[in-house]
Image (tube, rainbow, N blue to C red; front, side, top):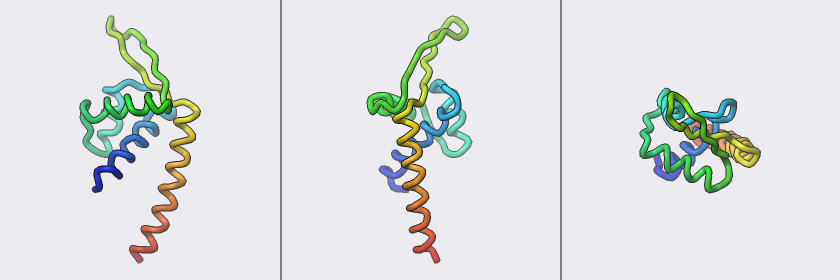
Length: 100
C-alpha cells in the first residue's frame, strides 16, 4: 500500500477509534491492532499531529498512581472524519468502476 495513503488512513482510524469514547495510547493501539499492526512509534506521532491540527483535545487523569493522557475527538475532528468517509465512499465507487 502507498505509504501516504496508509498514513492518511491511520489518522482516520485513530479518529474513528476515539469517536465514541475518549482513549489513551495503549488502548488505541489494542483497538487498531485488530485491523492492522501498529506500534507506539507509529501511533504517538499521529496523535501529536492530530493534536497540532486541532482535531483532538487531550487531558490527563491518574490511573494506578500514574498519569494517563487521554485523547478526545472534537468538532473539527468529527467533521474531518465525516468528510474523509464521504471521500472514501467516492473513491470506492471509482475503484468499483475500474475493477469491473
